[in-house]
Image (cartoon, rainbow, N blue to C red; front, side, top):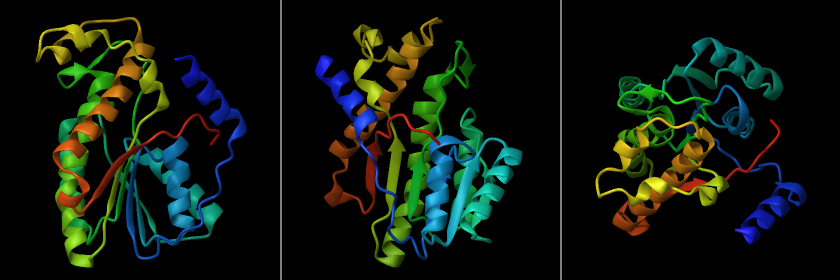
Amino acid sequence: MSQSVIGILLGQLFTSIPKPQGSYAGKTVIVTGSNTGLGFEAARHFTRLGAAKVILAVRSLEKGEVAKEDIEKTTGVKNVVEVWQLDMSSYKSVLDFTARADKELERIDIALLNAGISPGKFEIFEQDESTITVNVVSTFLLALALLPKLKATSAKFNIRPNLTIVASEVHFATHFREKDVPEGQIFAKLNEPTDDMQERYFVSKMMEVLVVRAWADRKPATQIPVTINFVNPGYCRS
């Protein structure tokens, strides 16, 4: 644990990330949770670097439009950014979003699933605690629902699309006490009220890592034409 903490501090305080310079010409990109923070800045970079279409997938269309205006102003690029509604607390909203993407988008080259929450209080969304619903269940429901379009894009354009989950280095810090319950009871245990919502956020990020790893074990790169991964962005100023 101490080495990991030291590594985090070194990475945060003494590492500078280069400004992206690659080309995204002709590509269609979806970024969830993209009206603020990391998703917002990622969408700005995709737009700046020539993407043909950048979808801001956001819960609030009003806030999404504000983000779109800011991106257009700072990049000077018009008619690329679109604002689509996506409420990760609702499974119906997730499936409605993917149905729209399948119908209206010719291709999806990149799906950057960044949306997540770290609530201060225990609450239920759908049938699970809100952090688990948004950060885990809805995130992978969205990923799996987008996968057919990503695979179709690969076949049609002879490319390898990218599906990225924004995880976090804090996954290593969770105690994950729920793992000790009988098999099949982890979600039921996570639905028991708790005041330690920071730990719950850590658990959600660890579950993201485990799901992607399990996915890769079942469908290695040689068996699927989409690169599926997760990233640790660290703390940042945006």
